[in-house]
Length: 412
Length: 85
Image 1 (spheres, chains in turn purple, yellow):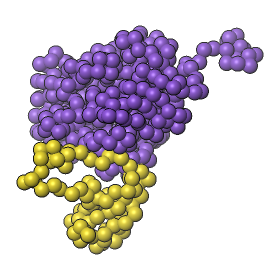
Image 2 (cartoon, chains in turn brown, orange; image 1 turned 120 degrees about the horizontal axis):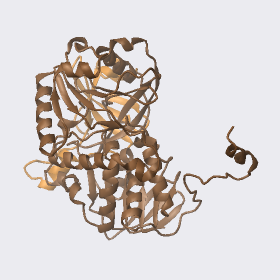
Image 3 (cartoon, one colour; image 1 turned 90 degrees about the vertical axis):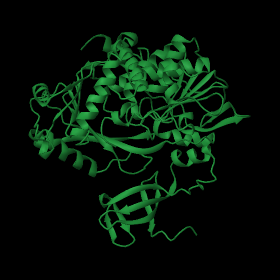
Image 4 (cartoon, one colour; image 1 turned 135 degrees about the horizontal axis):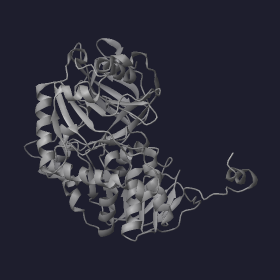
């Protein structure tokens, strides 16, 4: 037994510094209040404190840190999107990811795997070519590949796929996975060390708006006076928007995922099939991390269903028949805040001092660092950052949608 | 498997049904302003609660109204649409 462990037995107090400072009471005022201690909210707090010198910040979280979609996604990071706005935005994010472990002094297990979007139809091949061209134009590694290359990279695959043979796909070499909880912890700790207060189990019950401007936030632990509120609460966004009477196109469908029991490493790459509605990668622990498409109707809770593992497993066996004896270990769901054009909603809103980071549906994890960067800049300067001007809430009123649907990882 | 009751065919598995979204009154396209029209086509009530929605029993192509609690995922009532009362 390491001797340092003895200290924990002999000391009545916890002898090591805690990862997060615990705050029992709220201060009466803060410069910025961030709703939601997920990856996006904490990243914004971190960059506000580190790059913009604003440290009098409070992060409010109804549940626990990183317990929403940050801890519920399938951890895939990629930038092979379809629209120029999307490609530039996600590419910046992938760059930020690569040295985040250094930044935090915390191992994110960032693992570069390569990412395939498999095509089973001519239409899907055509979309792959289109995406590859847009990606290459912006200097992103993205290639259309044939079935032989897929087979070589993932030898266990059955290319016939139960009657929908794989014709090829889009290969994105920088595709990666990372340990998602650590991302929230890293940003949270970095913010905490710089003086940001994180209040878990503190629910927002109202937002005070006077003359079109934010003046305060009502919480389950009392009122806070503030002039700037950043809302980064994914599936709960419509509840918050209702408090300030702002309408949005967001609709909430659950997105479910599951992992298998751990097995020997056999799959190095990340595979996505739009036609079979599945995506799969193998974690560093050996579990297969699997997801499918959205639940088919609106529900604002994180309940799971039996239909989901049944349907997903059936499609998984089409692609990898040898998995028939592998057991599912656990399943869960997250609330995906979807938009009509599959692009996020970011930036300023009709209420002055209320900033929105939402509409991240099924694609928010990979954007965590760049959302933190751009939203912190937007909050600090009260002006939309240039990378997010294509994602504002106004675009719906102006009929100027961004059209990212072709790059959704699975058909929705 | 979740069961939904089709007003014509009775209780069936939820996989037999297609969701058609919340019932929303359409403004008159001839008189609505651009803003009103954009609000109608894009904006949704994404907050949880009791909602009246369009559903279709796909094998029989029966469109009907379902009242659902979208926070607890409960189907409260289903009935055929008889026009707005």
